[in-house]
Image (cartoon, rainbow, N blue to C red; front, side):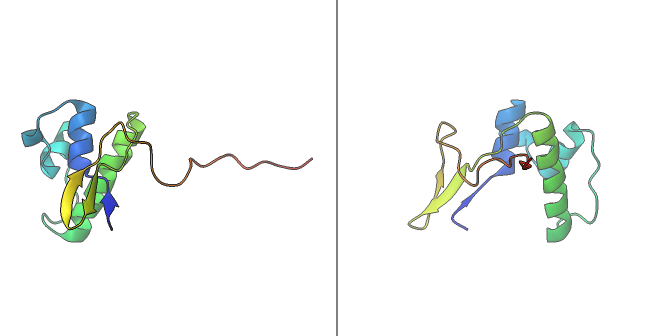
Length: 96
């Protein structure tokens, strides 16, 4: 993976909170959620991050790629950059 969404950055920018309030347990708590599973379990952490992402989408956040690797260096992607990825899903069109 050379491009990804850093949920901590997206969360901080969307909800206007400082970086020290973007730890996983704090983000969940601020959204009124409990941590599900065992702390520091990769699978459980991933599930909890997904719950945060879903909530952010429900709250109107437009999740975008915000970090990438270039020549072995971590780089921030500008929020003004065009959206990447597949186009938004469309409702199926039925023939008459």
